Image (tube, rainbow, N blue to C red):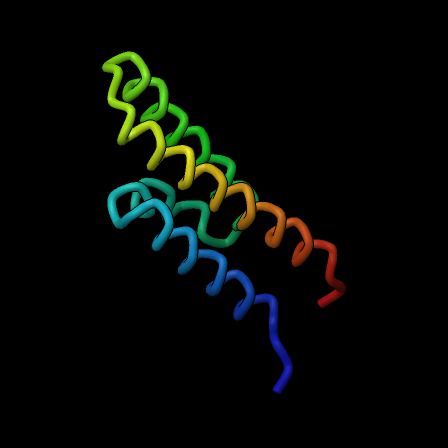
Length: 87
């Protein structure tokens, strides 16, 4: 079985949705055919959450958002690697 670009994008989108949650994923549905752009936009949205939690002094949420950002960075790395593959 060979992995296709479609399979790769679907996997990246699914993982991104799990990392950020349903609502954030829906906000970026228009970018599902471009995982790199989608993940970058998700990082911007999550960064807003980080700034808000930081302003409120909500350390629990800050730590959670930091983990989410780290996961998104990992997904971005994989998406960029997948983009280099000749389909």
